[in-house]
Image 1 (tube, rainbow, N blue to C red):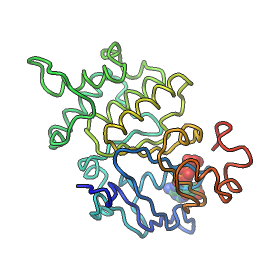
Image 2: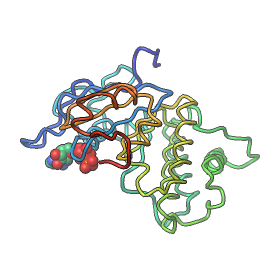
Image 3: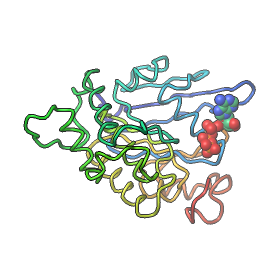
Image 4: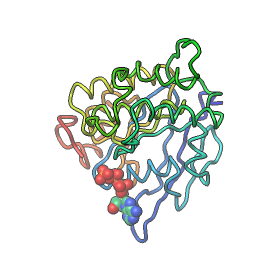
Length: 265
Ligand SMILES: Nc1ncnc2c1ncn2[C@@H]1O[C@H](COP(=O)(O)OP(=O)(O)OP(=O)(O)O)[C@@H](O)[C@H]1O
């Protein structure tokens, strides 16, 4: 259990080298439950590599990944998922020929088969009569995310904004303790982005840890309780949104004179 001092997830002095290129350079981060932690930085700063180190797709050259204080650095991505890491992908990875409901149901069923149902559901699931529990949970997730009317629609027919919501529903179906989001707002219009932001705030408010790796700096500054700024693989700054925006090194290297004035990369 996380006791308030042990982070849900911690990176300790992580280094990732690709040949002579150091993509992540002694980065340390702590992610707590019940809050949104943002990671920003210019192109090539090491955001995606860091995300992959957390999810288990990239093994660090050195350094540790800790979950509830336990070293999981060598644990495979699917075993980490079983611990309660739910993720979305930068490029959408839904099953296009399956319906919205089928995409979410598959994740619910897999979670149950792997014992993930010992964790509480991400959203309240009303009693649904004789229907199997996974179907009830799928229906509750779709309703909660405003996707109820699209349950029977094939995923490949959805515009990007809705497909991103289905990806979120699918990640939530795994009953995560930590939700890892890689560029979740890309391709969303303003209204969709607002809705997405409100959902993330609500989910974090219910106790979920959320890691948000996002190019949309104003969105991260608005949502994240804690922000890490990466530059050239290093943690350039870490603190509240106000603190990092006032940090001279961040202004010089990244934000420029007009912080959060618009979309930056
Ligand atoms: N598989 C790889 N092989 C070699 N170099 C890589 C590999 N993946 C990333 N890099 C390099 O590591 C550095 C960090 O890349 P990364 O994709 O993590 O940055 P990023 O902050 O996510 O960038 P972006 O905002 O453009 O997605 C870059 O210099 C990149 O070219």
